[in-house]
Amino acid sequence: MLLKRSRLLIMFALITAVVGIQSATAQAKTTPLPLFVALNNGQSRVEGDIFAWNNGFTKKTLSSHNDVPVVSPAGDWIAFTSVPAFYVAQRPPNDEHTAAKNIQILKLMGTDSRLIADQPPKASLKDGKIAYTIRSVPSWSPDGKALVWTEVTTNQTSGVNLKLQDEQLVIYTVDTKKQQIIVPKLPQHYFIGDSPYMSKALWGAGGIAVLTKTDEQEFMVTVYDASGKQLSQTEPLAGSGFDISAMIWIKDADHDYISNVGGRIIIDPQSGKTDDMNGIPELYSPTAAANGMSLAYGNASANEASTSWNIFINGKSAGVLDSVIVNFGSEIALSPDGQSLAYILFPGQGSNGGLFLYQKGKSRDLGPANVMGLAWSPQAWRVFHFDPNG
Image: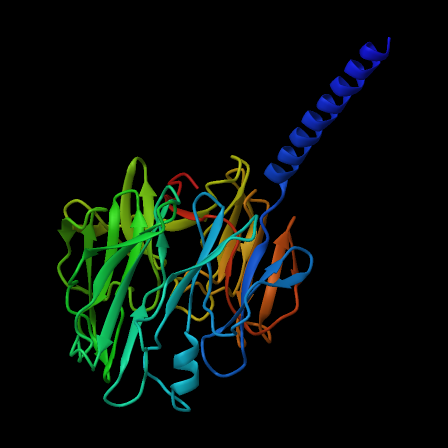
């Protein structure tokens, strides 16, 4: 009798443990990703701290010199650049040079935080001993297992890249924690004064697109595969809108193209040839259900002072969002379930500026006005084609 009772107690304990584990797993799967908000530090630079908002703000960084985060396609990490401490301490007041940057990643549902790209040994801004690395905003691979960015390293002591002309393409793999330079020398970039205009790398289904400003008026896009092999390169692009709006990967039917938020042209990643978009960019969350929210440009383009967005839910028009300018892509963010969106209004855009949340046809002010950018869920773009029948 005692033995049976002991067995029953053990079985009950095991069942309780299994149910508890299943419950915890289910809860972990349904825990919503917070909205990540980068708030300016008030020192007249595009630097600040990253906060997580979920009906309240929680500070996630401490240095006050970080940039806007980027959410991985798998929704498990964010990546962001930060200005290293030596540079903050040594740069002169009102310094307008392109700042040195580190890259960090932060696990969303845990405590894993990594500095994945640091500065060279004895990093310094002192004359005769200048040594530092500048990096672009990192971009996730489509599977969320790796990151890519461009970087420029200079070192006066060893005589390396003294004029900051050489720029390379770097990949970091999350599982192996290893970096690899896949392109040691990218196309020559433009300079603003004596500061390099950093190229921007964006990883998509068709490869790694690198946008390079080649002179005051023109840009060029070069596409590489993950090994660094060049797949294509455009002719110089003048008047393409890449100077005022971010490069994006965009899908039209079954094809992946390169474009920008302004959406004037599409670029074939295999040939480098350009064509008219014949539609407008539509932003959506690939993690959302079919009835998720999406946004397509309304009656104004990305370079106008007041851009309107048509809001669609389940493929049907659900309203218009006015006065939201999206140049960098981080001014607006969709929730993972596609039922909410956050957006920034800058001072002069019909208000005093601030962070707003749109849900169920209504917007509410979340408070801070010093917002640099947002990240919430993986986001994707597709071409929205107008219905000729209205």
